[in-house]
Image 1 (cartoon, rainbow, N blue to C red):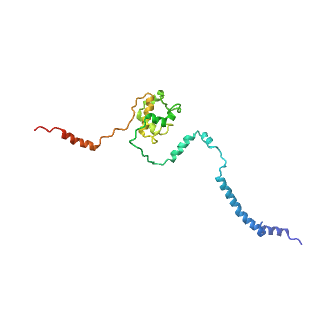
Image 2: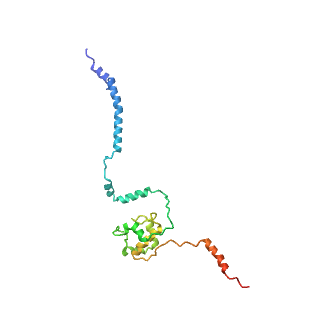
Image 3: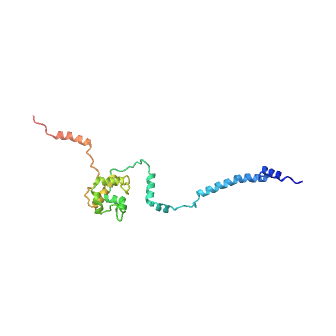
Length: 207
């Protein structure tokens, strides 16, 4: 007498796919091995240098009109320590305006320079700016104006940046005097010591 097929189907449904110890061992083995292999594959993918890139770095910067130099300068500014202390020798001679211009300003204000910036010896471009006065031009140079970034706080003192401003403006027709450090004040001790000496040298009043 053959077994009832409905009974056999119900029994197989209750027993599940694992029918012997060998199948149980294989199931346990693969349940551990497969996740480990997946993890190793993900780690290898993350640390490898062959990841696909959507857009190359140069193409991405060109797409937004950003040059590599400006990007690097912006990153350097962001990484700069806040409240950094600069120690400078106050007794060193001031750099000449021409030297500061060649070191820091020539890329934009020299020849050919960049469009919109007043260039060296360009009287037509400097004329309206000279009319603003030296103090305004110095403030624009130190704090930045328009596309020009601030020039203060770099390798040169503010006074040396001012000398470069005068050098540029004078090449365009101005007659600004070259700024210099103020003369050292006479020490108070010397001033106080000179008074007694002067009074001692004065003749005594007649009796």
